[in-house]
Image (tube, rainbow, N blue to C red; front, side, top):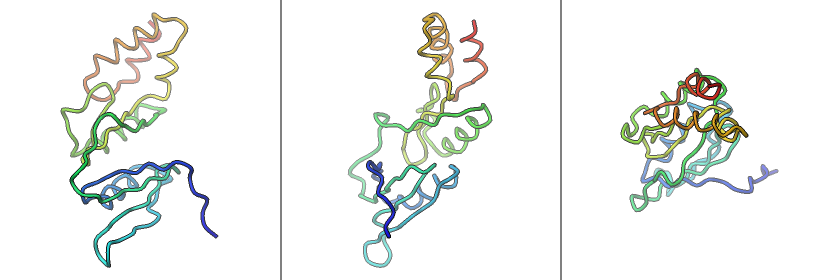
Length: 157
């Protein structure tokens, strides 16, 4: 019996490092695994199917024609500063330091991530617009990863 297909699956186009990326990502996220690897012939990896927190992805070794941009990013909602720091530290290692701002980072494969507090959207959409404005100002001052306590203080005034 086949597993039920996920309706929408994210496909990530890599030059030649799809398997390396899948191993990297599955080492970072809980509830993650590599499901299947398809190959050209016996050796060269063509695709890697993997899951991160139950979300299915396909990594394709398609060659150097296309590159990742910040136009697409993955958002990680974090409950604690410790969790945020852990994801930030692991994903930013070997990545583009110039692409790190306000909780955004680009990893070693060029994939963009937003590592944010789970409460950020709630703070930003508060009916009291002065709270949201203070949070936005605090957020814009953060040059790399987000300081959740500073956002909370800004929100509370």
